Length: 253
Image (cartoon, rainbow, N blue to C red; front, side, top):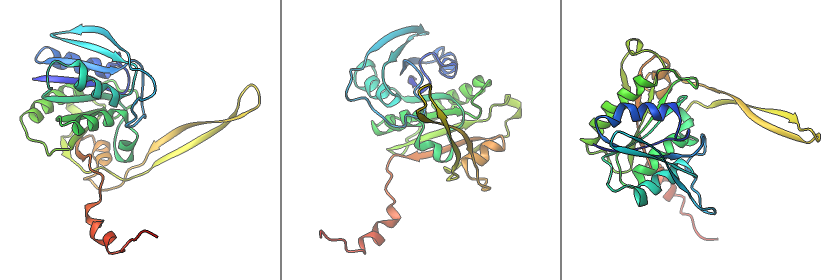
């Protein structure tokens, strides 16, 4: 296979290196990733400053490039300029920390896969449950197996797969569960502080991911030590509401 790798944690992140190690020996792999951490930038793109690309390392038959931009920038630049081939699959990750529920709206990891899907590629976003993840190899091997399956399947256009893997040894994983995206909110806090000039500033933190109780939710599956696989669509239209909204008979005032 021909594979494009990317992430939102930077080109030297351990999760990305685990993917390179797992995939490079068997496939043609090119990495195009941000030059530094770009977590929680969602689907931002860079318009007002130039993007600079640097060769970072070789691995197997491929090359890794760093980009002074966002995850979505990396995918756009890779597919539009840097790659000499059309990838069979794009893999974004491996993110340390889960991307489930409403986190999908903020995640640069997920947005890189979404950008690939928007550009007509099969794509996977992969995360491990813990911000201090240690079991990247387990997730990398599952990503390798899933990438092979995805490359041989016809995913619905504009749909990509969001994968979350428990941060436990292989023997403690209880299976793979195809899930829907959960809707449980984040429990957030803002810390009010003073800078050395006695000006107030706020530091956002203490986020706690809350989960529901339904076993078909991504976060619940992850909590129960199952790998969650969620098909995510790029089209955000609520098609079921179009008829009702049309009945409002909206007019220009």
